[in-house]
Length: 277
Image (cartoon, rainbow, N blue to C red; front, side, top):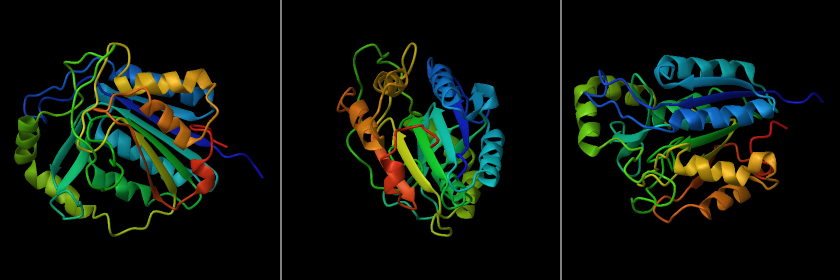
């Protein structure tokens, strides 16, 4: 049996386009570095790796790369998708969220809604493994829908306490109101109940759905701890061990989350993280 192949998409944004985000540019410091760190891991492990930084991290590029991966990957193959940047929330217009809110990731030109991501996973073939790393606020179940976790808060240590990767509530509301028809059309076109996900999808995120993740000087808090646990590839545990190890290094105000959807795979969950086979 031939070995599987891997495709990696590594996204990091240190700002967004103020024209779409109602005058707010969402300046951050370490997200591009986070993407570069994930890109390095992917290249070391043999992925065909794609790096999208700030102005190149637009919705068209991300959705195009995901669609191409869905076409190319077959049973035994692996997709690694990593994101570092702002996370947001908006009203759940189509009624498929138990907490009444859709989670988003903030790409340069617009927010990508979790409904869109859920529909994207349904395009992948059975037997494909998808690992997602999201260093963003409100990211606990960004690949799907789920009740919120614990409380919001800040952190300490080497991370800059003044910079959170969340879109301020007033800005979030203004962006949604300004682009309401656009986002409602997206939500209605991507109902999560329509398609079955045949691939196996694992998310390890920086925090719970109602928490904020923090930026830093070199890496964000979550990515910094992830890299420490990964230990330049010396980590030998499985996905559960990996998430648990990161949790031990983060404060209770920013609790990483492991979440899986699609076809349940005991083997995938108990593999060493990031590896293609």
